[in-house]
Image 1: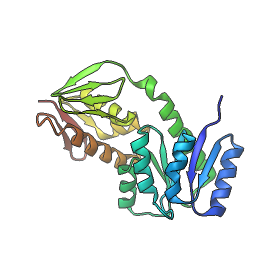
Image 2: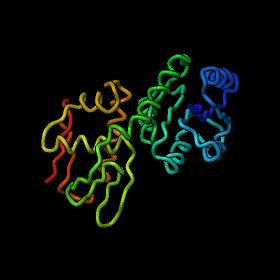
Image 3: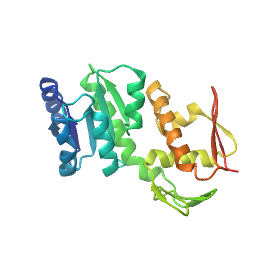
Image 4: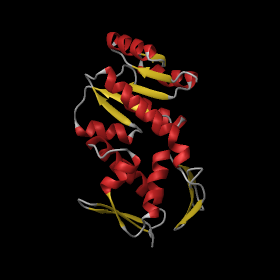
Length: 229
């Protein structure tokens, strides 16, 4: 089995050295960078399996880096590391494409578990998707290719966007409990995953707005209902 490649961006060099050596001792291959404006170039060079990005970096912050990485690769897992504790920072992180968010200080055991969870989710993604093409209003949704298209544009969805849309469609015109969505797609209904779901719902609404007959309705305190016309 080939080594799992990790891109690690961290400007606290002492912490970075500890984390890098700890990951390498567990069999990971780590490429580390401490300057934000060089991280994307390292990403292109190393083609990592997962990215761990400190938010506060010189030259370019982790949010901007994640945005650029998402333009290159929508599927690679991204974990943010940060000392920030404000909810708006967490939401911004998820809106920039984060899969997970760890607050400093953290234990190596926690980081390893979160890395393994993200890699497992990413590796299992193709097996959990059922193939076929679905017509949703004016859109065609190719589930196995994660493509959402209408007569004007075609959009490549991330795995979780695709799974969320599929789940909403399968339960269309019925109320689906928010906790059920979180447990099915994220594995638990933690605060961070709940905020992440909010971001994904907003994205899907934006993607589907070309067809006014489609609406993802929030049922406050319960969940969502996907109305398809």
